[in-house]
Image (tube, rainbow, N blue to C red):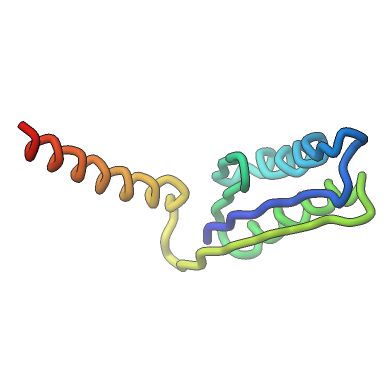
Length: 109
């Protein structure tokens, strides 16, 4: 399964920032050994149900250690028997974009 999730403490520091707490959650994900990537809005992680949910819980716990309230947004793509989708899904879209770019350049030439 693929999970995209975002964890944030309610409040933040005096500047309104939450990056220190979020960094602790991402540290948990990266130390898990599961395939993962982080972007400006979400962290994506891939694995089986139990291991992914265990990591998400530990990441929430890491944020909860510094905040009495935690927000979690989670979206899952549950597709048994498929692995490597954290990169394969993007690669398939890029292939379509490349084909579209090639088609467009042939039309202009």
